[in-house]
Image (cartoon, rainbow, N blue to C red; front, side):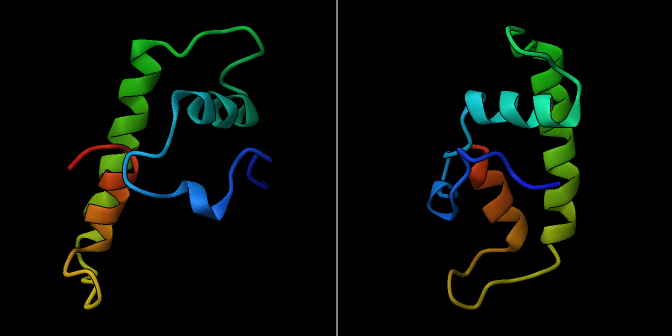
Amino acid sequence: MPLPPDFKPSDFSIGSLSDRQLVNLAKLAGVMVEGEALTAELQEFTLLIMEKCADVGDKYQSRKHGRTAGDEIRALFGIY
């Protein structure tokens, strides 16, 4: 499944994943339709999935940045 056109590699910096992009991903997955708002429950679900992914990424250290891949995943969502 391709990413929506509003995703660009340069978008992926600390805290760069916007609510709009989350909504677009949710629509792409079929859990939201046009005009729906991002609910607190869907945001919480997204953060739970993010944390599971980050837990896996914690096993991989970046020599260049001194952080783990998990840290980078959390930073993308604005969780430091």
